[in-house]
Length: 549
Image 1: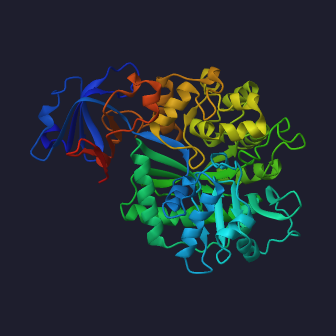
Image 2: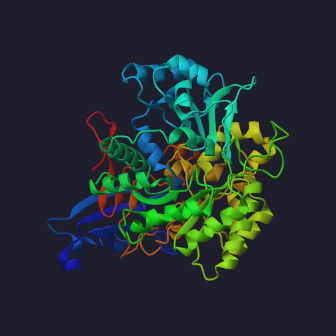
Image 3: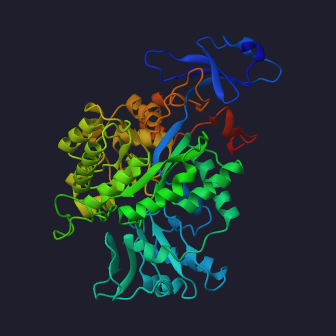
């Protein structure tokens, strides 16, 4: 093949292939979308150079595989590119002012949405706004304030449109919030969100595609080459397909089609009928991974064995009846799809392992990795042993822990917060574990995640240092282990001939960085399939500029 030359040749200080036992290489050649050769000699591949070869001499740089974020929400990030940026607010007054500014340029009656990546404890009042307060920003538009994927706050206009009154029955697996006097406060949690969100008009398709372009570019700029989006509705997947057609994706996408709002196996069967048309889509940039279920709530409603520290009469919410969830998961696997299920609190983890055990027993011979546990935030050693014995892969999200530790401490108490995401225990037990961010609740970023797993730092300091893992282990969770979760070990995760040319270039070796430097370290280049999707250009003023191709 060397007679035909390489399209791209990189010479670097160290090229870490992540092949066990293989020392760092110094040169890497790409032809088309694949790696074709490596050499420990920086000039060992010069025979591949032709007049059309792009040669990058980077004698002080380190090359690593591109990273996977195995549990995140690119769709949410795409929406947020055009939504009201309330994550910038530090007080409720600023929060409302930002919404008011958008209302001033929005036709009356049209919906106003906010970004989702904010925490109420970052506001001076340390709480969410109420419907009455949102009414102060505008009473002429329905307003949807989202925080993460489990919480909405809406104004009175939106409540009225949805027909929600103080007599509205609370949906199973949901919460309709009230204030101390029993009045509606605009808060909708989990399955109650659907009461309002079903009314949202379909956003402009071109705007959605542009949002995905911007959001995927931001992921790529941190070294993330593949995202496993764990909340994609059928209409979202149609937008992803259009973005792919328009070459607007700067990351590969593995989509989990969401069942949120569904409560029966029959409804899930209807969703599976919709998914049939996507079954044989083998595009390496975009395809459906499987189906996503949510068993319990998020930070404020994760199902725990012991009552909450802030309310001894409350121990979280289970969204699905376990027997019905068993039937629904069985319907999915019998159609040949995989399943990822959100289980955050230890009661939800226990119930999900029970459900998965029944599904495995009733469906012998399922391929390894068919049933995945998402988060397993609070998983006891006994639960970890059970999951490993059943061969259940787990995704963990240290950035989520970092950003929400103060909220979690308020609800669960310091002892349980220190036990969240026990990476050390999972690895020591031989679990198939991989890592992600859970953006918008956690901040995405390749090295930010690795920094968190190695230090256990959070916004309230180090939590559970006994659960820390090494840099090399953390690196694996975002590369080789992540590729295995996606059943793509033959394509990605290592830098070897024949695999996709998905790699990142760093101006220093991340393994040698001090902790504080590692947290905010981003690559100078991210390359997917031999294509530069992110590049920092050195400007005349000595600063770097982000450039996406």
